[in-house]
Image (cartoon, rainbow, N blue to C red; front, side, top):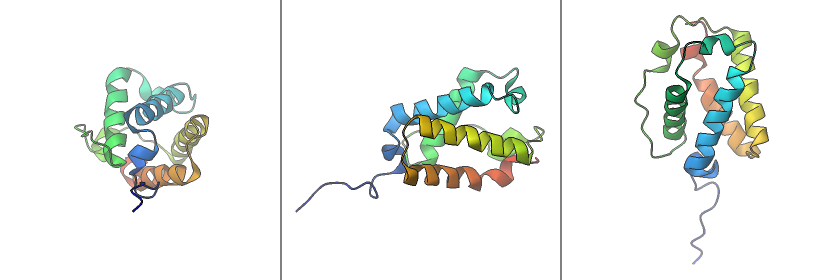
Length: 126
């Protein structure tokens, strides 16, 4: 009997490289957002170390990893930021670029983007 675990049986977290891979993606996306002139102003006066940990925990939990997110819900965390459609798209572009730079597979990119897109209503325009 073949005990090999296929990619479809592994969690997205595992397919993204486990803790090192997911942490790198989370850090790289935030670094890219911070250098993105369209959205970087949202990160003024933010403790980036704390934010990177929160985003990592959220991303880990959302992709089937073992970490627990203990931050605010997305709507509460983004209320008052008035993130618009153009900024949302720019952030998604940052995420796509980072995944491309890190060699993330097409199936995994699509899954990450589906998760990201599912959060849009909690983030844009609140």
